[in-house]
Amino acid sequence: MSDLLRSLVSHLKTVPSPDLHVVRGQPMYGEDAPITDVVPKQLQAQLVDPSAGMMATSVGPPEPGRLGYFLDGIERSRASFLYVGLAPVVYGYVAAVIRKRGADRLMRKHSHDSFEALYYPFSFPGVEMLQAPGVRVVDTSVEGKETDDHPLMLREAAKSKITNQRDRLESKLAREWFESGDGAGWLVVAGSLPGCHADFEEPNVIGLIKSHASQYFRGDEQKAILTLQAGERSALFVPLGRNRPEVYSWYLRMWPNDGRDVYFGLIRIEAPATQRTVDMADELSRWVLAERVPLSLPDSRWDRMIYPIRDCEQYLRSLAPTQIMLDAALMGLG
Figure 1 (cartoon, rainbow, N blue to C red):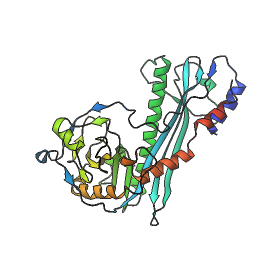
Figure 2: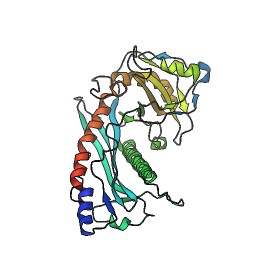
Figure 3: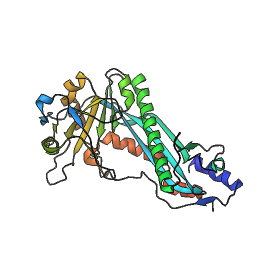
């Protein structure tokens, strides 16, 4: 059971109020959310070598490399399990882990952190009812901006805060690894590279992106990407229009997609924007291809997920609060 919610329930029993409205049975946001539940957007990119064009390159056979550390995070939120007046209280839990693969090929925890809190706009009355020992409350109000009183907008503001907290947690673990990690090994990040990578000279890190909501090319260039064959990569490019340090990126087809969706087996890789990345693009791609086995089944994203990242997810899920745990914590409220 969540310690935070246990403390909250114990506290609220001592301060009954007609302004409280409890909601039970709401699903947890973030539990196996489909990868397609994102808003597609068209962005811009610049080829690292415009003269070569968006050509397909065979990277060669899979090659076991130095990918030995793996970073991923999760977020869980429970929207509107409690209202104070008309303002929803949102429960949020985020966690991140770096797992290390040993010489025996077994995965072990390298570092881990989590953050659990309630999210509520302090500009609304009633926040003092939530403040109790063992209960962390995060203000979702935006400084200098009048807070909207639409409950659904307040919920979205809270979810945005939770996602930002997850990003900060992942970035914290990555920075600690850059500062004191194994210099001979490489860190694989699930998703885009954390911005802190730019504070270090040629850090051994790559990011693996399995979502394709953001499209960076059009026309023939996009066609060249979507028709990549297994073991082929695209040309390197710089994603533009993002509030992040510059990276070099390329697409890699992990598995054949004959008779399947055009995105099947297709991932995007990010690495530091250095000449070393240009020189190592094929080698890094071969390292990633070597991570295709064991398969990440039964995860529906197995074609775009390497097994060590699934291992990170499974580890984090084993520690995260569930819907049943949260409902059990709320049983004492009316």
